[in-house]
Every structure is written in structure tokens, then in C-alpha cells.
Length: 200
Image (cartoon, rainbow, N blue to C red; front, side, top):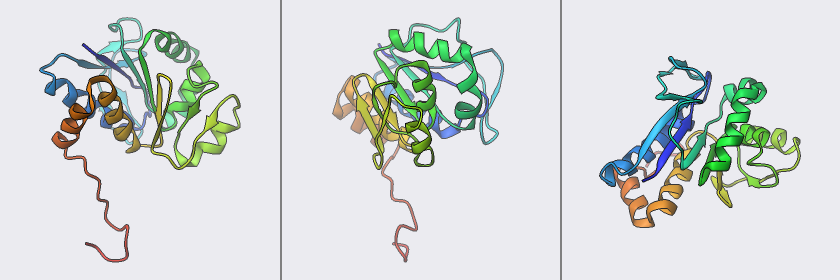
């Protein structure tokens, strides 16, 4: 059984955790409910995210089950608020030590750096924040990759890239064929419009 714990906080970027949430939950369904994913927040009650979506966490920092995977999203709330919240930073550091995998998306990497798991590692973050993260020191920011794996740390660029890294992670945990089945279930086959001058 794999338990995924996704941290949420005020002004977290929605797709940073909702995309991986979808991947983890579809993975659990395809494994006949053998796994579970939970939302974890500092306090009980609704959390308003960066674009206004409100979510209700399943657990607080003090009452969640043991986590096999710790997921940390980014967004304005990560880089401007939680980065200065010692309660959340301490929780990330302690929880990461016990988790088998740590998964960061976008500027969630800033929180992983502040808490310790990203220090001395190769990481990815949102393209607009690469220089800022690198300037913090004791980290190697890898550019022009959707996600990167360094030991038990998986980090990705911004927003939609978290789906890619989450798919890689479920494949690592439960096999490539399983990850392919998850990808097919969610019909994840990106073909964005406007890459060329004329639509297909």
C-alpha cells in the first residue's frame, strides 16, 4: 500500500497538486484501492488556492497517517508565505525524512530547499524562478527539463509538469505498464494548440 500526502496551503497553485492528485488517485483505483491519497494542511477548514479554488484537507500536520510519498506544490503561497512559516518548513523536513519519496512541483522546490530535502541536490522549478532558487545556494537547478530525479527526490517545473513527474513516480512504485494504464485512463497525451502557425 502506498499513501500519498499532498500538502495544501493558502495560494498554492491548483494544478501543482490537483494534477498529481488525479494521477495518484487513478493509480489507486487501478490497484483496486490498495493506495490512498490525502490532502494535508496546517489547520482544518477550507484552503483557498492561488486562482480561488477552495479545497478541504483530510488531515492537519498533526493527525495524518504515515506518508510514503510527500508532495509539495508551489505557487505564490509557497514562495512568498509558507517559505517564512517555520511550522510548515519544520513539518516538511521531518516528514521528508520518514517518507520513501519526496515530490515537489514548481516553486514547491523552494520549500523543499528551505526544509532541507533539496539541499545539495539537482532540482527543477518553474522557469521564471530558476535564477532565484539557484541564488539561494547549495542546490543545482536543472533547466529545460520537465522533471528530474535525484535519489528519492523528484522535482518538476511548473504547473502541468507535475503530471509528468507524478506519472514517473507511480511507474517507479508500481511498474511502467501501470503508469501507462494511468496515463491512458486520464487520456494524458498532450497535443497543445498553437505550437505551429496553423492548427492541425
